[in-house]
Structure formats: C-alpha cells, structure tokens
Image (cartoon, one colour):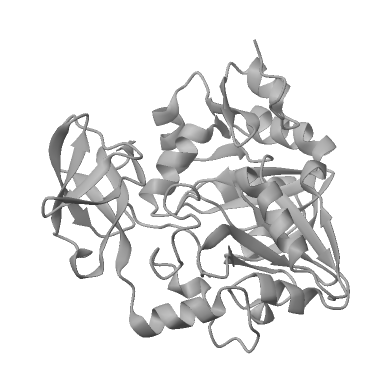
Length: 369
C-alpha cells in the first residue's frame, strides 16, 4: 500500500505505468529503477541518452532590489560573477563553514533562483528566511510549481535540438536559455549530475507529462531512476548531500574549494570559519577509493580503519557499471589522503583492503565551452 505521507511528482502515474520500482526518497515516492534495470539505464546515459524525473528538487525564487546582495550573503560562491543566463554551483553554509546544503544559483534579468536538494527544502527555506533581515527582497518557495527533467548523455543535444528553436548547441556549460520546447514554455540549462553532457529542463508542473512523453515516447530517451543517477554521479566524483557532504563537513574538506570565494567583496555566512580553516589547513579530505578484494562491496556507513583506528565511515559506495568494480568515498587525514594510500573497511565484521584513487573515477564529458 502506498504511503499517503509521501509526496509525488507530476510524473508519478507515468512511472507506475512504465513498471518503475517506486521507493521513498526525501519525502517523495520516486522511481529507483525501471524494468530494464540500473545497469541498462546507466549504460544508456554513458553511451546514448537518458532522462530523469528530478521534479522533487526544491526551487526558491529571489526578487527585489537587494536580490543579488542577499544571495551573495547566503551562498559562498560569487553571484556577482554571474551574468543573466548563467548559473553556478554553490553552497549554503552554517556559521561554522559547514554545509546546510549544496545548490545551484541561476541568474535571470529580474530574479535569482536557487535549486536545492529535495531532502533539505524546508530546512534550507527556514535558514534563508532567517537571514532576510532588512533586505529588500521577496522570497518565494516555488518547488511545487516547477517540474524538472534531466536529459543526459552524449546524444542529449541531438535529441532536444529538433524540439526547440532555442539554439541548444550554442548554450555553454552552466548557462541557460528561455523559450519553448515542443510548445512548452521552459528554460533549458546545460547542467546535470552524471558527468555527461546534457540539459535540465525547468517547466510548469502541468507541462511535465508532455515533455516526458516527447523525450521518452517519441525520441527514445531511456527513462532512468535514482539508482542510475547515484552510480553515474559517483563515477563522476560528484558529491551527494547526506553522504559525501553534510553539516559536519566544509567545502575545503570536500575538495570543493572552487565554490568558495573568500575575497568576493561581500561577507557570507561561514566566511570567518572558512578563512580560519584555510589559514590553519584542513585536517581531513574527501577521497575516492577502490576495494581491492573482488566481490566485496563497500556500503554507506561501513567503518573505515587506518593504522588500526577508525577514522571515518564509507560516505558513498557501490559497484558501478562503467568502472566495473566496487568504489566509494570517505574522509582520510590530510597527510594520508593521496592516491596509493591503503586502508581497511569493516565489511560485516571483516576487514577488507581498499586503496585511494584519483577522482573522478571516469572521465568527465560535460561540455566546458
């Protein structure tokens, strides 16, 4: 019996009709995989094109005269570096410099939009509203009004180009354009969470079925669920909130230095803590690893042991189709967080050897134009 407390995306009925295995995720009932299976979906994105329903993500709209200054204050990247039509990866931080969440920031002519993780929508919203103070901004949580489809893979561009007059070939990485796709008003962003080229399509919730039907039914994009999304992003070395980053980790520890602009000319929440950490140096760092024993998988929360003592847990871990081996992430002391370092993972009471390897695990093929 379905859990009535779980929310549903506008495409829920379609997922069920396609035979998707539905699971609870971040307060939503979401497809984890379709009948073809996670490996087939993963392969479709690496070699062709797949589409994900990620309408569970949260969207916050910021308007008003102080919108740029306000988002500068609540995120750690430099909003001032964005021109209208550009986006950036950023972080919403605590006063300790740790993650409330990671996010995307989109700059339009007359507004900014923050895209946040589904599991953190209410927490993020409360955090941002608490910082409004006297800023002349209007904040709107538009999460329930927006549908989001992610079209990913080397064939993404050729799949969407015939459906729109927007020159998708001319959209650089982390930029977006507004217009219509097969008569549906939306904006198309050259972003994604797979390490492949692709686009994310934001539309009104009521238009999601039409877009999905065109991409999957008429143009052959493989429907993909949360399982493939996780294996793809792990191979690409992309962090997942709640696993690789959380409110105990800072961007510097997670290797996300590029999203922190200490000298952007505007103070932001967490600035002083990060200045101090940069001066003193980090004590640990997120690393990728491979398990050295065949047929053993390191799973989330398994203990990580170095020199006889537990130093962390497995943050993310699974066997991924492209790598074809058990891989994962964990935090190790800074001086030992280099490729070739060996440590052990407690797999159901047995110590199994693993080795630090360079991330990403597979080459990133996003179009960094």
